Every structure is written in structure tokens, then in C-alpha cells.
Picture 1 (tube, helix red, strand yellow):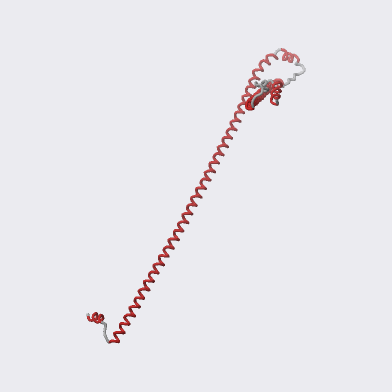
Picture 2 (tube, rainbow, N blue to C red):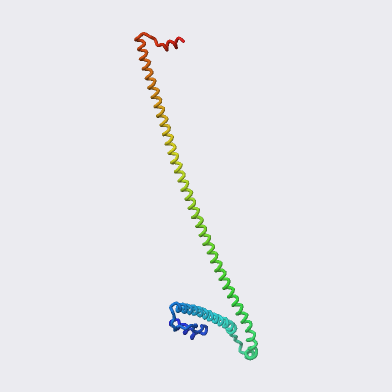
Length: 234
């Protein structure tokens, strides 16, 4: 009912708005059909309002343009001298009609020129606004791309640096392990050499004791070692 009253009010107050849109709104229908019917009615109402406002603005512009030449031609007041009554009578009687006839084309030309200038200014302003918006869009797009490239560069650098640090740590660990292994090998070699030295020293000591005992036996018996004499004789 609210929309019906608004449309009826606009239809009666302004000639530009059409009559009530077609459709029976009192008939019982399902909710779905009612929604579609009301949706069509609202769309129709919005279109009618827009068309009516456009026509009203066009009529106002036409009225302003038509009033402009009248004010331009009729606003000037000529004050003749006291003795020029005949000239004033001639100006008011005869030439008034041709002057009015000649003024109409110039007024229409001026009106067309004014409308053309207004349209040109409107187009230029629209072009300028479009240019500014496109430039700002391009700038924002470029800034977004530059920021994404910078973030990509930083992430890649950080990943490479982390990988390098990991490799360095691995190399340090391997170096430490290898050095420890070499030290262990050196210690093992030194230990083996000490064991060999101890074995040789023990063998030497045993042989010395053995030969001392054999020499003591030979002294006590008064004999000489046969191997020694054979070697000495030869």
C-alpha cells in the first residue's frame, strides 16, 4: 500500500511520471509470485522516477536557456533626449517587428553556442576525471607490483641466507668431526708405538738378563761359548 500511494501521488502531481504500473496487487498469490511482482513494481517505479527527474531537469534547462536571450535583449533601456519624441515614436511603431524577427535567430545561435560550450566543458571534465582515475589506478597497480616484487626478493634472500648458514653449520660440524677423528687416529698410533717400544724394551731387557746368566755359567765352569768362538774364529 505504501508504494501504491507514492506512485499515485507522483502520477497526479507531475505529468512526467506514468500511471500506476500494470499488475493486480489485490489478488491472492503465493509468496514467491508476490515477491517477483513487487520486485517488478519496484524496478518499474525506480525507472519511472529516474525518467521523470531527467525530463524535469531538461525542461528546467530549456526554460533557463530560453530566458537568457530575453534578458540579454530586453534588459537594455534606452533613454532618448527631450526633443526626440518623433524618433522614439518611429522606433516603437515601425521597426519593432523586424527587430524582433531578426533577434530570434541570433538568440537561437547564442543558445546553441552556449549549449555546445557547456557540453564541451562537461566532456572535457569527464575526460579529465577519467584520466586522473586511470592514472591513479595505474599508480596503485604499479605500487602493488613493486611491493610484491620487494617482498619476493626479501623472502628469497632470507631463504638463501638460511640455506647458506645451514651449510656452514654442517661444514663446521663435519670439520670438527673429522678433526676429532684425526686426533683419535694420532692417539691410537702413538699408543701403538708406545706398546711396540715397551715390547722391544722388555725383549731387550730379557735378552740382556739371559746373556748375563749364560756368561755367569760359563765363568763358573770355565768354559767358553761355542757359538762365540766359532764366530770369532771365522
